[in-house]
Length: 427
Image (tube, rainbow, N blue to C red; front, side):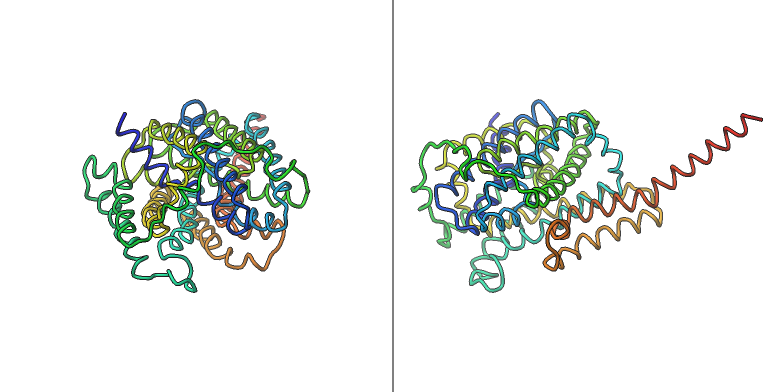
């Protein structure tokens, strides 16, 4: 039990579910009360969904949390004073996904996730984490004083090296607790460098309940809904890839029933989060990376992580204590986790049929997923949302090309064979 608690704590730190709401609240300039409410809402939604998913629904060791696909939308909508419309859009999107889940429509998408598609998606998820990871690792952007400073690198590099060395060369305890060991070392270095402040912990209350509809009653604006729904599709596709990767690592068969239950659970979590003023919830790829690096793929640590999320949601002081870990230490933990997603994607792609068509599908999908978001600022509306999501670009491109060059030709050939068979039988 003691080991599972520590494993669960690793999942909590690697997930960093509090970073997205803190980032959005800071960018929008929310008052302290509303910012705290948003963080509490995220913890509670993440805890409820993680617990339910691991014990009753998809039954895979997957952490749920706020999707980064919505960060830019939440910031732009929040700055325009439209958090009520954002909440309404999230609620309606989640309701639609719930209907698609319980009717089994989303579950049928599993047939599209061949090794070509699922490998591409997981690879792109890892690449998509690179921007955030390196920003944390290097201490922000080049125009910031902390960028690649000796103090920043002095925290980030030892943290990352500890995870890498313990994961590769460690045995038993050293390997399975590699992230927690790295966190302790990173925080100890940060404390020695004077980079940790506990002032925010003292300002938080011991107990708190999130407020219902903190931004007022939810509103519906069609234009806002469309952009949020497209972002929701990106989160669904990313989660589909994460489910496939977790299934692959644990050896648990991912059937339509698990997918139906899993996405239904995610959508209910998003509904709860929207009412509390939070983000949609989705499956976290970086925690699947942790499974691979530590070799611990049990659901029990994930269940404990879900319980810890709930505690953090109702005890703001505990949540603030987690947030004192400096960004370079977070980046040092994230770096190997994101890298593991990339080589997990590569390992899945290695199982695809070695044909020129598959190579071309994979190459074009990855190229567009990495390159196109750089030009997203030139587009607005729905296409702007689509172009900014590398995961959505990679997934939809690989699925579309797979349909055009593989599925449809196979269907046509089968139809022709059936016609010839019918003619032969008539004679």
